[in-house]
Image: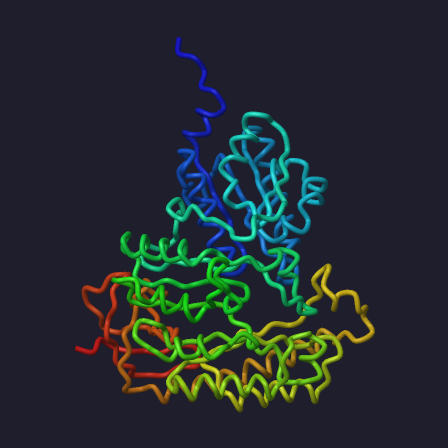
Length: 450
């Protein structure tokens, strides 16, 4: 009779599932954790199937994020009763700020791991199985975080995220990121370039440099900024495209603008969150610039890179926002002409300054909702007009897959979505010249050009 397998041996024969909510940083963290679990010998569970290790990779930036997590944990509690060997972990931003509370409210959770300890997930899972105890890893990492980038299990075979800076030092009054991601910690440029070269060697052709405030990047060894890093990554042989997300207006220095304007394989796209068009609201948000500053930055960028596509974030219904404040935001949309906008209704995040202001300046939900719809309607008009103006243009489109109608779908270098009609023998990962035949509010339609 053969001996019963040990817990470690059973684990190595098992499967895992990582469920991710939130931003691109969370997506990359999810890929990093998946890589660690693959390193243990686990395989990814089929969609809808059971798994031996489940990690909820959480977000705490958006409203009701915690309720979604606890709802998912309620389902997993039943799975745990059916299978006591199931390992359940909670990672990400909610784990970072509420890890101890999660273990108290959901004692069937085996571990919580904060945003600074993603690299330790594999070891934590092994410790949980061996020692049968709860684990909480919520400490902050070193000043210059090191990534084992070769172990990341990436979700695409041709597009890759590369984190260049973690955390944020801005402490905007509405934002919880400094509490969930910690203070700014830049990676060494030499390590980032090594990762970029390795990715190209693995067949990746598009890289996006990531950071909560990516243009605050400073190489801890040389002090060089994002302009230098962007140019250096762009110089990696074989790389077709490089992008960066997300920038803060106060860090758009001349070096970065000059690099962005250099063209080549540097994508002509800049995401520059304004958050509001009102000086009064921007001051209360602690954004450290006013409307004139923001417009001057836009002018500097467009003067150097006339064809660049700009996108932005906006918050409506911020505490104390008047109708006049909101009209200033709408006017900013008209004045700038963004290629795309992401807009949200304000929701208080625990620990932030605005959450401590109380309800005396809160905006009624129906008012905030109506304002959001007005903003989105205006932006749809602006985008539709801009996109109609692109009819007849030819763009190089990176094909990402198929849309719901079965057409090939991809993105231009300026980050516009294109649905490709009548394409033949095109595969995901291909770069295809496409002539635009129709402009829609949220996308373009095109056909292969030659």
